[in-house]
Image 1 (cartoon, rainbow, N blue to C red):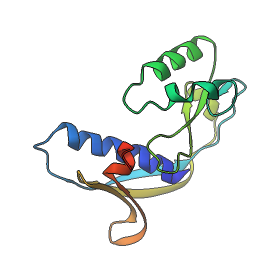
Image 2: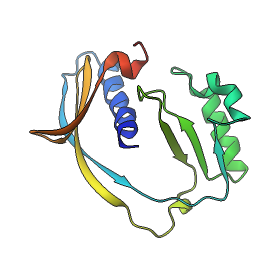
Image 3: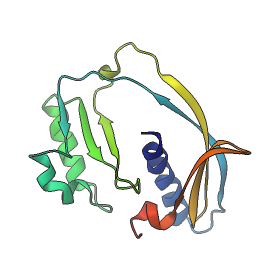
Length: 147
């Protein structure tokens, strides 16, 4: 989902600002969003049983230890894709971690759009057009899980 991808990207823009106090707000920068089909015969879904029982591990906002260990084991086991819940998207929609680029096949990306992402320590704004138009705005509290 596009909003989820923008929330994930916006989080890292915000985190960059929070980690570098002397850096001014980030002016709108273009990012390309696109859709791509994937075909996998080996996938994990962390949002369904039995893996959902460990949701607290998969949705920890400050430690990636459990998810990185899982991804390393999944790669060794031939898993190509991991579906998981976004903790950055205020609506907690699903994301996919592609562990093997072969799942994209030979298809070309489709539905390409350019989104402009601007960030301050208070909020991140994602707009389809620099002058207005479709947009999503995320407060710092939403992206950091404090709301």
